[in-house]
Image 1 (tube, rainbow, N blue to C red):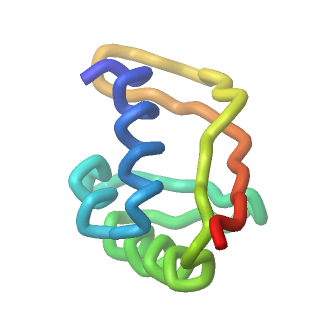
Image 2 (image 1 turned 45 degrees about the vertical axis):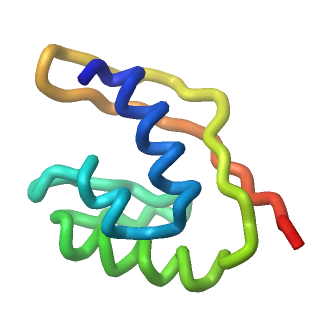
Length: 89
């Protein structure tokens, strides 16, 4: 899977607000930096945070825009993006 394909699939997975769907795209040793600067290391920590967020934003639509690639190789990539939440009530 290319990095760009990952971002497309990741956004679709996030839209489900179901960690079991998102988890399929996350490696066991992944690192995520949230917009508040918090670094989450490992799939378990990332999963706990995402599940908390999914519980908090129920009924909202999540979308990714303005993807900026910091680094991309054949086996890893780093990118930043803006995210937006829209209420779907």
